[in-house]
Amino acid sequence: MSDKKQFMFLNRRAPYGTIYAWESLEVVLIAAAFEQAVSLAFIDDGVYQLVTGQDTTGIGMKNFSPTYKTLGDYEVRHMYVDKDSLEARGLSVDDLVVVPWEDWETEETVDNIVEVVDSAKLAELLEESDVVFSF
Amino acid sequence: MSDLHTVNKSPFEKNSLDTCLRLSKAGSSILLYEDGVYAALAGTSASDKITGALADRKVYVLEPDFRARGLKADRLIEGVEMVDYAGFVDLVDACSKVQAWV
Image 1 (cartoon, rainbow over the protein chains, first blue to last red):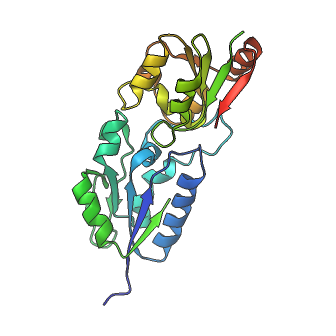
Image 2 (cartoon, helix red, strand yellow; image 1 turned 60 degrees about the vertical axis):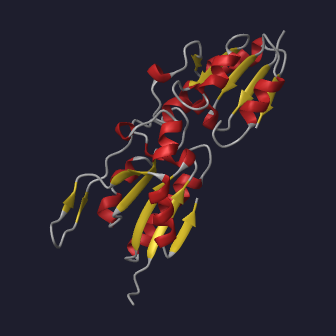
Image 3 (cartoon, rainbow over the protein chains, first blue to last red; image 1 turned 180 degrees about the horizontal axis):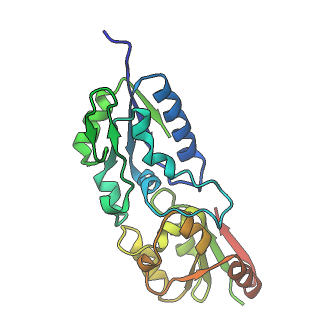
């Protein structure tokens, strides 16, 4: 059995109103640095973390949204977005950040690792994970 | 003079907006800020709450919080007014007191 575990980061909070989104991002980067298989899921208000065009100049907080675009470079391979949560908020994948991914060894590329999935798929992914971190 | 009610929680996560709308009186003003701004968007499962409130209350949304979250003005529910920090102060000044639904 490999030492590599499937890590799932479950994000359910909007950015800025609380510190959860930012804290999750910090831990994701740490886990990725330890060469674990890292996936992220965005559910409920967590889908708002990925909305493009965030501009925090008026609220005196760091705009951490550009970091999501770079997660592919940190070996994050999957970013799943809950379809029901998106639809309840009148959002579509077109409102969300695009995150490219490339395997530097095999040169395999993926244009966008952000993937909208339904509840059944999400339930399956959560069950398959070795560890789930909730934010 | 009427009251100013403030809501800073997402309508999808907390019931702050619901209770605010249930207990605020006709003629009062409601200011949405921080995660409360998500309630001001058209086309969501929570939009009807604000649309209903607009029948007899004024609804405002704080622009810096709205912009921070990447939200677009063209998706605001019709009738909701955008205010800046100075506008927030003006609202507080114009109302008899502030009731915060945190």
